[in-house]
Image 1 (cartoon, rainbow, N blue to C red):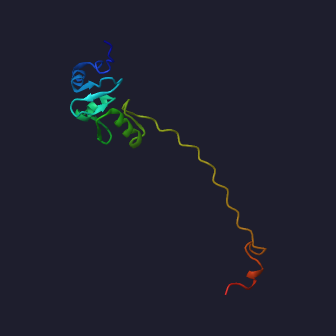
Image 2 (cartoon, one colour; image 1 turned 60 degrees about the vertical axis):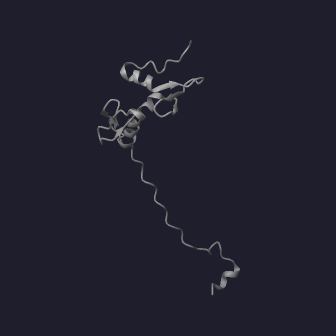
Image 3 (cartoon, one colour; image 1 turned 180 degrees about the vertical axis):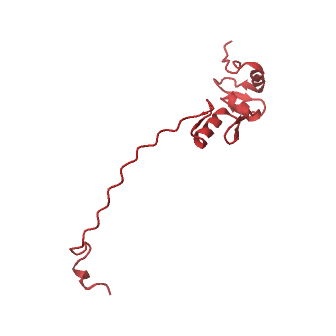
Length: 127
């Protein structure tokens, strides 16, 4: 009997608890049913944290997340200089070279001829 053992690879008591929490869906390659809520999922580790949240806390602002990838996304957008994997601040990139100032706009040329929209009917002006 051949079985995909993705769930059983996890070691320790958490792996044992996950084996009790999920069952494989018969005939499906990578689907598992949660015994707690009945939801069918492909990523059991992600769904496991819905019921048994871990605490991934941002050390800068104390925001908490149930998954480490959500903490990484938070840091990427809220604290771009901080790397949560190394727990260090990355050096800021050097400032971009300043662009030369834009060329001055030349003053409009004096109107030496009639406006383009003028025609012989407009000679008398608007009354």
